[in-house]
Length: 64
Image (cartoon, rainbow, N blue to C red; front, side, top):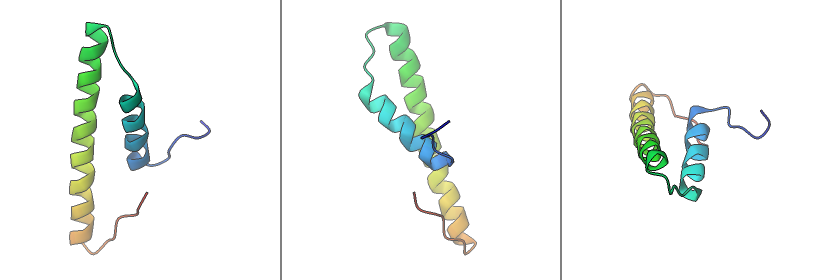
């Protein structure tokens, strides 16, 4: 789709922006939002670890 990120990192940053702007008033929505935020945090940690692994093998990760 037009305007969508083609990289995993880009998709994570897009999700961050969406989550920052969204406010839930429904408890079910709020619980789902918490779960998605947790998954996003885990994805960020995984990205950092993969970048460190690349650098350890002499490969410089691409910048957004």
